[in-house]
Every structure is written in structure tokens, then in C-alpha cells.
Image: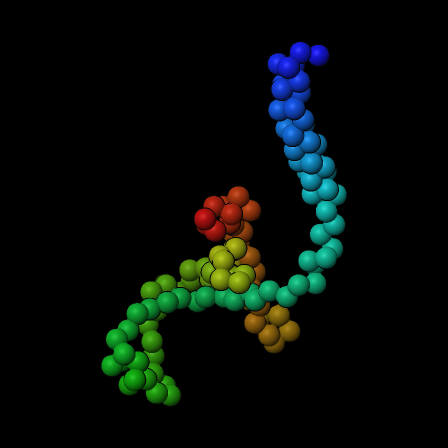
Length: 116
């Protein structure tokens, strides 16, 4: 084998090893069992609305005070998981408890886009 062929083989060998490792990692990711994360707790919260008020007004709040929100009556609530908007919904009552009926769910692609 001439020196030029030997150099070409040496340069291709690390690339071939990298490609092999990458292919193995891709196969392992495809076989990943998501059962390990299914019992992880997350924080789910609903937002009725928001407002901004000066501290002076905040300090004057007491029992019976009314704070007007920016969201109109009848508009859907925002549903957040760990602070990320995942859906919108409406309040329902189930067995004397409040619940939420999801009316619009944010697509996984849109959720990923909002993380960036």
C-alpha cells in the first residue's frame, strides 16, 4: 500500500467509528423506555388572568377588595405545566370540585419552539 492510501485509511477510520457510534446512539434512543419518567411529578397550574398594579394599591388590598384582571369573562383559562403553556380550557365542576376541560392543546412542536 502506498503512503497516500495509508493516510486516507487513517483519516477515514475515526469518521467510520464516529458514524458507528452515532448509529448505535440513535438505535438506543429509539428503544428508550419512557416508563422511567411517567411517575415524575410536575406542577400543573391554571391562570384565570393577570394584572399590574402599583405597590401602593397592592398594600391597600383587604378582604372584599376586587382586583380587575386583563382577561375578559368567558375567555379560556391558560393551563401551564412547570410554567410552560400547554393548553387552554374552561372551568367545570366535577363532584363538587373545580376542574378544567381542555379546549385547545398546544402542539408539541409549538411547545418546543417556545422553549427556545
